[in-house]
Image (tube, rainbow, N blue to C red; front, side, top):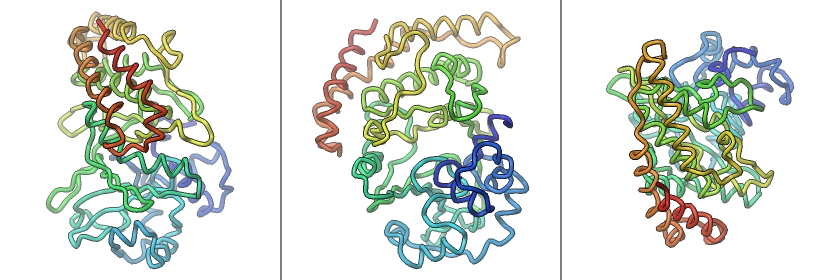
Length: 375
């Protein structure tokens, strides 16, 4: 198994199966084929890195660059489907995106149309998207996709770091990418690293603890106080709103070209408790997590780790770090309580399905009360 940051670049889910077929391997092949997959599938991944051989493979036969309207994409028109098929794609995934739902990397050009990202020259790029498509007839999977745009609005209400509103058109969810910045004549590609890579946790079957993630955020980020607070707030939101799919590639760090290191904006935030396969909460707090963490103990632990990192001094990753102030963390968490109560009372007006809101309401209100009581 290679370095964990390389695993971040591997396609997963539908994209992995599709690419394995294209390179004439079994779609169920396991990690023993990952190196071959990397050489074909990491030519245009999320983030700023790419593998030379994969980029060459991707550009060896790029075909015609053709743009489509949003409606063509959302409705998966015949022309769009045929064009994708000519690139070996079947709206059953993408060779550069991880995840379960079929996804494509599309870029809006100066003519307003959407192009496959790797076929459009940077000078014409205006906006970059991941487009996630509904699949099958399962109503619970459909509800998850339909709620993702709603949940990003809820996240903004809760004060979480969000990038842009998500737009659902039919069964296609348009997600603005935050690892690309289009500038006149060029595109800036920002570095992105999952918390699996941050914590050196290989593979997909194991996850770090929340404690270890916080330890690394404290040691690596420019503003440890802000990033740890954001991380804990996301865990609170996940629990309150039923997003159990908190695996180690659903959270990432971003590095800009000024040296700033911080959590990326939130992504993959949805009511995953609806998933028909059943999904258990993956990343947990050490000795303090049965799905209902004691947030006071969480803050005590974070402050303890912060003190240990500060005492390590210049020998640490960035030298002496500023003290994480517990009272500021408490204030940040308590500020979520009114928004949680508002969601519990008015979530349907904010776009939540009434059945989803009814299922979650008591838990949301309980979380609000616990945050109010936090000292």
